[in-house]
Amino acid sequence: MNRRYPWKVYQTGFFAGFGKAAILSFLFYRDILIACLAGIGFGSYRMFSAGKDYRRQQICEITFQFREGLQGIAAALGAGYSIENAFQEAQKDLLLLYGADALLVKEFHWIGQQLSLNRPIEDVLFAFADRWKSEDILHFAQVFQTAKRTGGNLISITRSTAEKISEKIEVEREIAAMLAGKKMEGKIMNGIPLGIILYFWICSPGFLDCMYRASGRIVMTILLVFYLFAYKWSEHIGNIQI
Image (cartoon, rainbow, N blue to C red; front, side):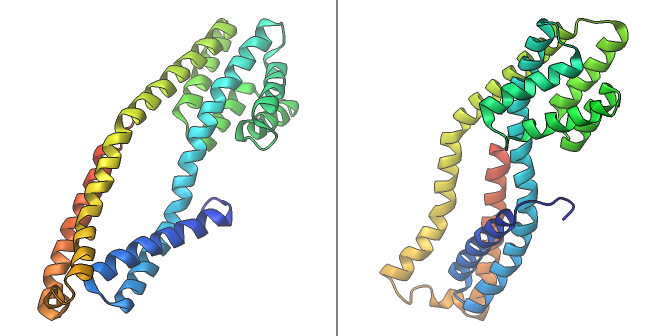
């Protein structure tokens, strides 16, 4: 784990992965030992990958807040503040909007500390973008560096960048809204095979007993592989990146 996240993130990831894998394995193999082993294995995997999911959520959150931050910086520049003081003024606005625990509030505080040490603001912005691996923040840092060297209008550039980020966020929201129904349909379709197995268990006890013996488990394993492939494929189709 290269980054430290709240332990609850890893805990939630483990139990969610354990529950899904254990239930799925038990339905296909009807063996508690196999279900527990599969649950522990997939739960451990999800515990480590939960950090990546949490990181993606943080990047989305800070990108959304960064749009507001840029608007605050542009307003401060328009009021006559220097670029260094503009970050401090924008931090005050973000503090009122999101609170002291907001990601961008902490980042702007860090930027203020770095500027107080006389670090070039371009280097600070690039370090900020590199730490978050955000294309929007990196784009602003590159444009800001070019504008400052060539004497460009920082106010106009800052506002333009904020508008572009806003447009991107709105497009992402529209796509998410259009895909929400299809994703729900996909989840229902993914649940139907499991529901059929459970239906036979309840309504026709013993009907599937042959599938849980040696030769039958080979067939169930093949079916499980096809099911997992279809599940991952449905997730891939709905995962649209802008």
